[in-house]
Amino acid sequence: MPKRGFYLISISIVIIFTLVYFLLKRENKRNTDEYVAITPIAVHHNGMKFIDSKICMQCHQQIVENHYKTAHFNSFQIANKNTIKGSFLEDKNRLILNDKESIKMVEKDSGYYQEARIGKQDRPFYSAKMDIVIGSGTKGQSYLMRHQDQLFQLQASYFTPTDSWINSPGAVKKLAPARPVIERCLECHTTYAQNVSGNKNGNRFHKTNIVYGIDCQRCHGEVSEHVKYHQLHPEETIGQNIMKYNSLSRQQRLDACGLCHSGLRKQFSKGAFDFNAGDILDNLSSPDYDENDLGNLDVHGNQYGLLKASTCFQKSNNLDCTTCHNPHKKERGNHASFNQKCVACHSKMSNPIACGEDQLQIQEMGNNCIQCHMPLIDSKTMKVQVSNKDEISVKVRTHLIGLYNEQNLE
Image 1: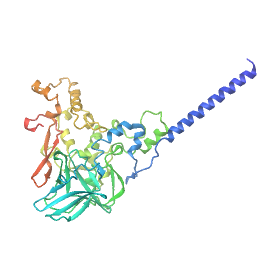
Image 2 (image 1 turned 30 degrees about the vertical axis):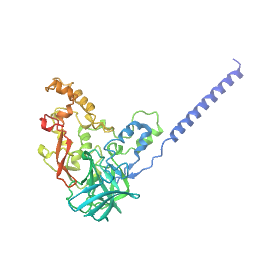
Image 3 (image 1 turned 90 degrees about the vertical axis):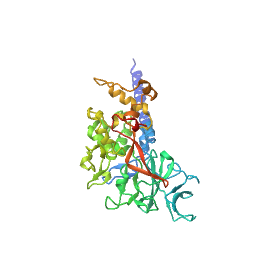
Image 4 (image 1 turned 180 degrees about the vertical axis):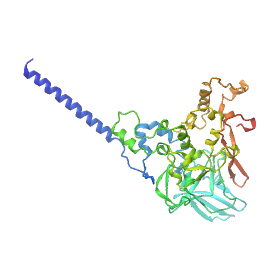
């Protein structure tokens, strides 16, 4: 081949590779530029930076969209028309406390209010704005009022089973002052809220340094470095710079859920938001009850203690909360999914357990293991007053897996 032709071909190859290189680099830069900038929405007192969970949608869109529908994520929200479940219609917007006192829920241009009424007076005794909704509405909701940087719980709450306004649990059956909200009240409903009171029993919180609901970072820790890494390395398919649950011990996984699902606990010197997933819960606080006394383990709030007392848990080396629950998805009411988890475990046993009940009845129940072995039970601690009637217990599904008689069943 003539030298001139050889040089032309060589130069052409170099030019082509150079163009391809710059085109790829430009495309990669374009893709990177499409990512949302990482700007903290809040900062933990330990220095951890919280980002908007919407940023996680860049790579985990379906997971985040599913999580937005869960009770966890919707447990602490700004009060508005969409988040308040209770009715403001004229025939459904009143809580009767006694023969003389009531609370009327009123919608105004400036927001949603609870107005105390005495007798037949049209002018309210007081009018308090609902600023924050606490509770997803699965069982019910309470409402918080801001006064400067202070938080107070208002007297009227909402109870989902009766679709009605109720007296907030523990409140007297007459008009009462709004109750101060401390960080222990918030720790199980939000990812972070900065307490500026100077002590853990104060009710002053920073107005903007707060992360509403239980989001990704409450369980996975700080994710900003994880996001930065994968924005720069979009080809990497293995998650980097993030806490993974499968890297934790069984006790650590249980404790991450037990923080909010292990009943009342004695608080040590540290604050409610000092626990991070991966920590050992007993290093922060201890149970405020006898763990070995099943009578002390109420179905409301102590799913952890009841599960640990179950034979299923005690005979397994790896059963934990996520064995049955996917925290990324709304699963409430999906009995078929939970029943399949039961069958999956019991079918692998050396001596599989066969249900001894009437087969026709089992079929009529849709092979619903949960209905029989984890029934809804009256809570001993969670009771509500519907209007001016007597208190009723809230039914909660027990996590003490066992055999129950018919009066316990749904």
